[in-house]
Length: 216
Image (cartoon, rainbow, N blue to C red; front, side, top):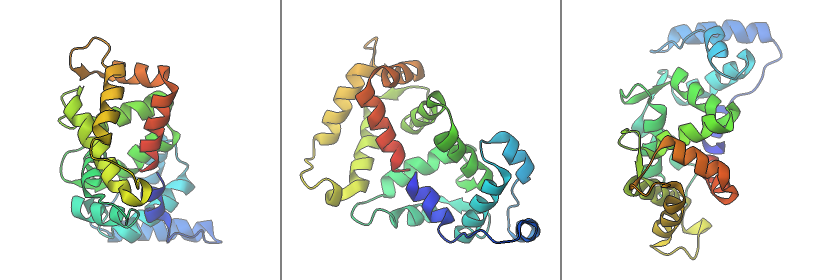
């Protein structure tokens, strides 16, 4: 999570006057192309406080003055945190996971809703979000090819700096091991329930999912 949170809050600093912050936020929201939902509404919909939402909004606006971010901008921001690898493919899949409206852009509301799940959600909430990340074609199942695509994208992003002895077949081996444990009925696909149960039952698998979450 450090990459996304860091890039959107790195230039944000709390000011002494909260009243001034509130006035500034209201003025800023009228100046961008897309005005987000009221902070009170987002506070009710997420697990963030209003003050936390203000900090996140300021960071989001610093990087995306228009109030929305497209995929190319998202990739550019994300790549800064993984200079030793190629983050473009993983950033593409991550962008799609945040783009819940499927319109090619992420609004502030989309960002904080996803972030709330990943940072403050229950274990099941986080696993469901991760499942949808892996379900590339949105058919409600994860097949072996989809899991391989995501895992390979993660390895590519981490690069040789993190994995100096990485061989080309490591992602496939990783997927084969996990897929066999997840696909309980051996029908060639993993359902949401199979995914959640397998992760909750296997400590190593859960740790691996949390590792993937950390590159968010």
